[in-house]
Length: 343
Ligand code: AHM
Ligand code: MG
Image (cartoon, rainbow, N blue to C red):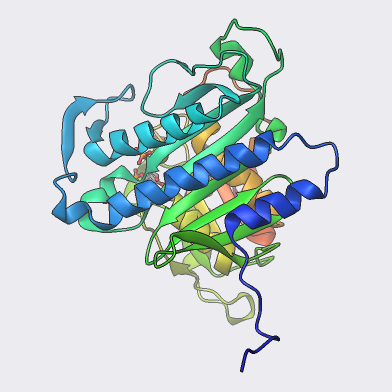
């Protein structure tokens, strides 16, 4: 007999259309854009899952604009995302980690600008560890103009109309927000559909995991060194010592932080004076997700989402996660702010 009480399965496509129907005047363009990203994510996921048998692992031989080795999967993901966004002709330009300047799409009059990190966590590709794709969507400030420039894309993260990530992990997840909470979908490979697995996700107010590349400890500011010591000291009342977890793929580390609470940090250091991670296609989108889930994201001083960008590939330090953990690290950073990196 059919169990009518069983929870109904909702696909990403259905969910996007239902959300759009709540806004009678909506054109459906943003919904189309999100569906296109979903399609590209499925294609990338398929390739990631069979990477070992299709000669797509390894380096492409070139370096990207940041001087980093480009992996074949990076390029594949970049191509898939860009061609999916080009199809519906509603996006005018893409800015991606893999391309130096802006990538102009066929419809220069399209109303959306999309930032992409097509494959984040590249160093984990060849070792079968979780990787991800990140996207961040803005409206054009001069709609209709066919003159495209990077300046138009320099908008603070607060102006994102949607943002999200795909995590290629033990399963493939797509998480996104349009500024009204965070939804998570899981790819069911047997039917090739993303299925809603969690709606209105909330990050715990505090957590007991800290996530940072501690190999760089000696190049940090004193405030961060003291905070990490604080995390490691035993104190039953505050559930310390905290656990250390660091995957080295920001998407995976931030997704874990979203689910379990705690903090993920990529700080400024003597090696990376402005941090390593990129504001526009790594930090802003993940900050919007975490804030929408009730958490915080700062650059050490202020909110990531309020930074006025000056360059499309600019970097920023980031401290992101549960409210209580981010406020605590800020306390340490403020206290020792006069004692900067010595190395
Ligand atoms: P990528 O975009 O080239 O993959 O680099 C970004 C990645 C992040 O996913 C991750 O948080 C960070 O680099 C790890 O860096 P490190 O190896 O310095 O800890
Ligand atoms: Mg990246």
